[in-house]
Length: 390
Image (cartoon, rainbow, N blue to C red; front, side, top):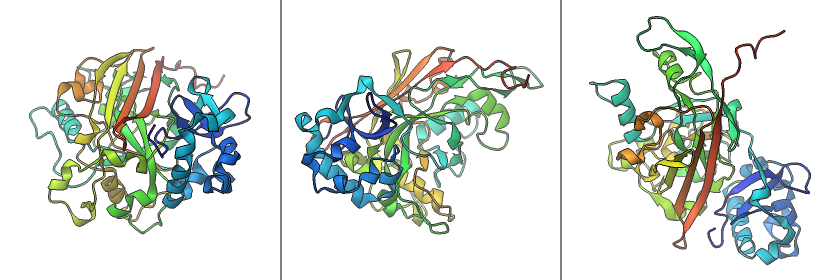
């Protein structure tokens, strides 16, 4: 992990020998129980020790709401301690013995469509012979509101969804399990400090509101999505499950990864013009059944997370602690850099398939920071009788 910080990320987990969910920070191959660590002499008198409510709630919610000054202070105090395993002692548990949990209470969930390469690829597939991008695409970050109640932590099995689909050559829809279950390789952003309703969040205030970054797989049933999305946007083809990684990496730990996004050189409306770059040089990897299918580069994104937040709130909509928004599928310019199976043209997921998305980023000391992984295995569709009363 990065020297002097918490580059491994914060999370919540069940630990052997301890009751209930525990707020933890990742240090190499260990999860460190912050309630226990805060009580050790090495942290006496620090903000970490003086604010036990951050670590005793079984959720990151209180720490997320504490604000950027508190996040930075805690990271500065924890960094040197986490670099010394002798000082950590019994507060550390090997990751292999940890059961990760969803680490924050998800309020609203918004998914964007911020990769020009992905949007272009998908437009060519869905609208052959037409302009692949809609006319508004380079003027605003397109997104949709998802279903926060079906966001699950990495490792949760994903049941194949059922719904209406229009099979090829048919003139009437049928109901049944999706035949085109897909993945979407994405990066997510977790809100810490809420905003007031009616007051937009400027692009320059992004880091005052967003705590950190996680990895996201926005599972998609492409046949259900294609039939229902005429003319409205994603609904049942997306709402059945979204997986997130267990570790939330603070934005400040990604300073060495910051880059301008592609839209920085275009003629944008004033509220979307960045005063500082918030694109991120993250290297993602998509595996299915341990086979590497692609390595999408997040550095190629057209819209930044700061622009997404500014657009999401420009009409006066507020954000709350725990709100999650995601980038949309990350795809690069070459075939081995796409972030979904529909772009690869290799077929879709079978029952039993395991999907793993990993990511790394450059660290301040010149090393490579591991952002963890988000995984899920496809379970068979529910029996048609499963939802009936006897």
